[in-house]
Structure formats: structure tokens, C-alpha cells
Length: 253
Image (cartoon, rainbow, N blue to C red; front, top):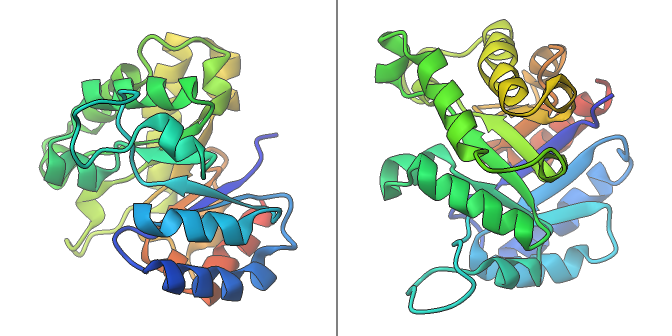
């Protein structure tokens, strides 16, 4: 059975002091759920303080991005070994990175490989936009992102990959992805491409998260689906009551 996985993406929120205060409030609420792999992903500058506070706790730490080169003239970027000094996880290819910073499937692939080489767990994000969804391109887009993002990996490397499905079209459109709909995309357009690249065992072993507007109120609905193994949580991860409720729901899976 796949171990449930819940990661909080804090995005560009919380200073170091605010991040430590948040985990101080969060830890007592989520420490009892050892069935669930729990991760928080602060902004870069908050990572060292949050990592130090979580040292020895059951909660892991990740960053929201990295660069694939080990060092050099890459102003503003952070190398995999720099991330590994404080973290065990990294989010790669988030929809906001793809849309606002021009991140391509090739970039995502390079970052995934670099993260794995550094001993990090890569949380690779995939998902279609509103235009792609309305044009009936969900299968083509999501399958391509999966195949190109994982290109060149072997089955052993896949043990340290988690995939997050983000239906980008569900943001601010008044439309919501149903739990059943998200599960169908994960089953048919994520697990099947993984099986094609590797084998059925790997496709069934890889954990796939749902990553759009998960809250304490709707988490159980999504986690009741057989192919959804957890969540990549945005805004709700900044609210200890909501985030702990999501983790509690994942523990019931």
C-alpha cells in the first residue's frame, strides 16, 4: 500500500520568524499521524530557521524549486546541494513556475534529475490550463508532462519521485475538479504513462497527489479515491487547523 503524503507549499509567504511560529503551532496538531508522510515547503529564506526547528521531528522540509547546475554564474538560483543542506524534498514544475517563469518540460526534467542525484525527493507537478482543458487536450498535455519530466530515469530513481496533479483550469474560473474527475486523470493520464516508461509495478507504486484547493472540508472526498495518495496543499497549509485536518483525513486512507 502506498503511504499517504501531504506537503504544504507556503509559496511566497512567511518570514523566518513567522515560519517558525507557524510550525510551533502546527507540530502538536500533526505529530500523531505517522501513517502520513508530512512535509512543509517554506520560501528559501525561511528554510534554514524552519529546518532547524523541525530537526528531529516527524515533519520533513522542502523547497519550492532548485536549479540543475551545481554552481556557477546563475544569479538568483539555488543549487541542489544547497537545498540538501537543509531539506529532504523539493517541488519541481509547479504550475506557477511554468506559467509565470517560463518553466518547460525540459527544465523540469533537468531539475528532477538534479534533485534525485542530490538525494532529494522530487515532487513533480503536472496539469493542464483552462484553454487546454476546454480544447480537450488534458490527456495530451498531462501525459506529455509526465513522460518528458521523467525521461531518462530508471525504476530505482522513481522510488524518490512523487507526482502532483494540479488542474490549473480550476483556479478562479468558478469550475472545480471533482474527486472522481481528478482520480480518472491520475489513473489514465499519469499512471499509464509511468507504466509505459517503466512498468506496471512502478506505475502502481508511485505516489500521486492532488494539488488544487484542497481544504480540511474536502480532503476526505479526494482521499477516498483509489489513485489519489495525498495532497500538495497551498493556502490551507498556512492554517494549522486546516492543514492538520487534511493530514488527519489522509491518515484514514
